[in-house]
Length: 208
Image (cartoon, rainbow, N blue to C red; front, side, top):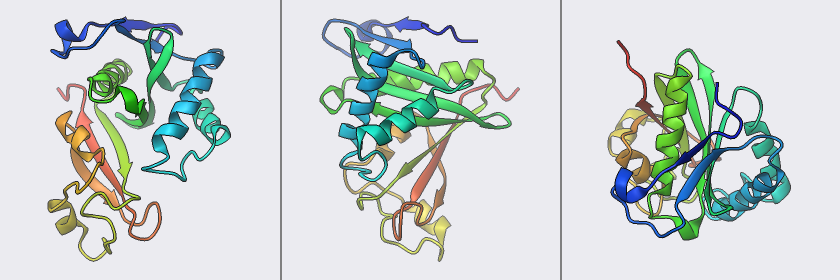
């Protein structure tokens, strides 16, 4: 089991080969009693998804529902702090069998490009592995026409569409591919006509 205030400190120069300025970031487990951090995560979600997925968390109240749901027993919820400020958040939950779902993940826009997203993913992968996960699954939607899947009738030939899949704008697809995730499927029209959700997965545990 994960202790409620489990902390991970890391120095990027030593661990990830990435230069970051002091203070060193800290990854902590957050729970229902961490009201200050919950409030910061809610505000971070609204700011961060306003452009890519505006309907998901349009208000702080809507974001709070998502955060509270992600803090239920059995969930993994980790926040990246710089000093005392929340700069990122990631969660994971058991889906079925040996599959865990990574959802959600967010990093403050002003802090992107510094390895914080990678650190959060590495952290949650390790925790899910300890809980018995062999596969980590995630979905990333395209609501703004930023991949080659947007605007298509994917029911015609989804395999061919996935074979030629590329990001054509600022979309998280490239981030996930760089971290070793592989495209394993697509849900056509998941967010509306021509707005699919791309599924990616990664082996995080030993199959032997």
